[in-house]
Length: 234
Image (cartoon, rainbow, N blue to C red; front, side, top):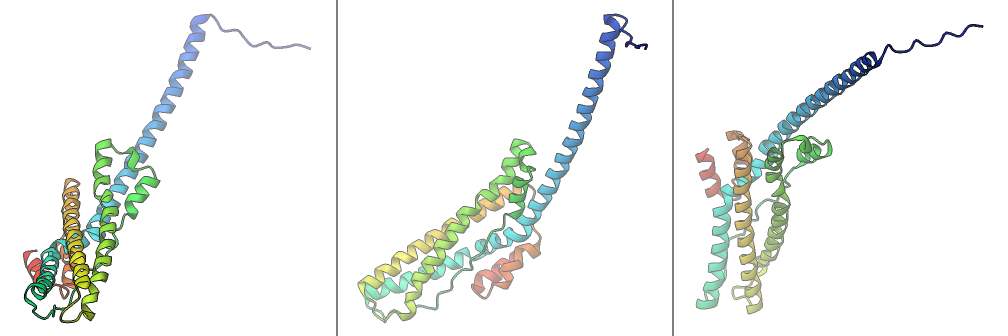
């Protein structure tokens, strides 16, 4: 029986050459894999940005435009209510306020942003770019919380429907406190809406007239003066 032994390498030079070929092959494979992965993440980041841009423009921006459009009228009705309470207290004029309008409660969508986090697309963006996209979405918890407080404030203000021409000192105090809180929440929501559009502007998120007017036009019956003025400006 004959055994065929493997032929030995002809020296270290030949051995080094074969190792070099193997290393180069591995490096080429790794580089190609990294290039494919980089292309995948670039594509994923671009898709995530497109989705967030649509979400900010179509879903969230119209709500912000409504707050900015109606902010002055919201304050005006609170001022009238406060003036009526003060007139009753100071001049004993019968308390007969106009019907109070409650601003709409909106939910601010962040599904596209959440998906960009879940898929890892956000973490594969440049740090500055990821921060820019996070900025408008980071406002939304504060917006939601302020809207909840505002609805509670207006719930307290509904007692004016049962208020007598001369409310008790306790009722008057409760109403004045609720007015102050509602005014503060409107100011905060207006400020947050301005910040939202400032952050969106740095991302080159554009808004059409239809998007600006989507809720303003629909809800103009709430605050007709402000609704008509906002629609005329766009």
